[in-house]
Image 1 (cartoon, rainbow, N blue to C red):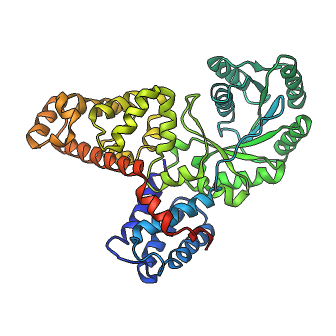
Image 2 (cartoon, one colour):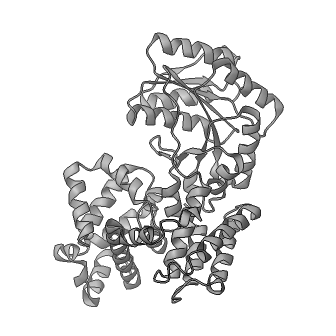
Image 3 (cartoon, helix red, strand yellow):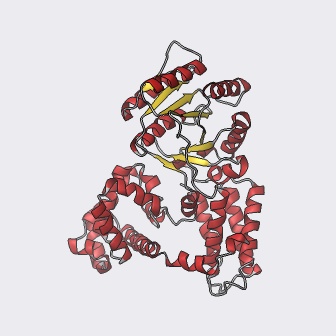
Length: 446
């Protein structure tokens, strides 16, 4: 996720390496690279220009105040804050307080509406302890009702359907009455989409919305379509004034244009992101965490939250202590790998771990290739797995023979593991960001 913009942003910050203080001259190239990174990420040039102008103004505004802060560190902090603001500032909740809460799902055909509807039902059932009812109101697409029924069966959520009824308004209304009678506290209405935006489609979704008065209306769009996604979001919002956006197929989005500019363009928050086909691959959208991922910092908070669902509390505390002491070893890493397999989409989760993107890129690690990393670790002795620092050249050569990989791959893996461990250790202490925050308390207000 966001591989392209991450690499370009890193290049922008590297241009400041070695400089001792912020000046208009030394940030000029960095600002230019940041703007290029945003445009390459399919961000509208006008938005990219406004963004970098803000970054430049705030960086120059600290020229005389923050002489002891390295320009590279300062620029990362400013860009991170600006990215968070651009994407909405803070996570936006979903309104399901009524009994029942009614969630209307809208979007273009192929955006992943039906799959997301099931994911949302599963999320509300497992994470929020709700009793959701799925409603099949896509009366046009072949097998749409059957698809929702199959997904509902997989997550053990009831699906309300009227296969002989072609009026989505009456189906939705009848479903709500059914929910009230049978004690369902959330109703999720999956509506029909079209291959393009047209007036008939907009009229129908407006009729459904006015007929059921939902507590929440979500627009679902494919993140991989970039600015087309933003344009669709704008058109739908003008037609039905929805409450929030859902970005699907985020695992395939290497640019990030939709995530970066939907809130700015439409004025409505991104509420959820969806990755992969598995029905538990749905996350609340957190602008601050997403900014960290875009800047290559990972998203350790989200990773820990997911890990806590798999680890018991005792194990989680043990790992935390080892990270803080910089004693995280290959045994711990191998244990994390095994848990990751249970946690969801591999590539998406890898992006949450600081430094892991580079490791997986160099080793070409994906769902099917996880065994390669495990083979390297399992070719080490118990002593080597517990003490990564003892891995000299003769030990590496033996490991390479044992796992069937060349010495370059072994060196690369160990190097990236060491970088990952150091970054996790630094983040666990939080000193860098804490120091920056202490020295620029008023920067965001400038």
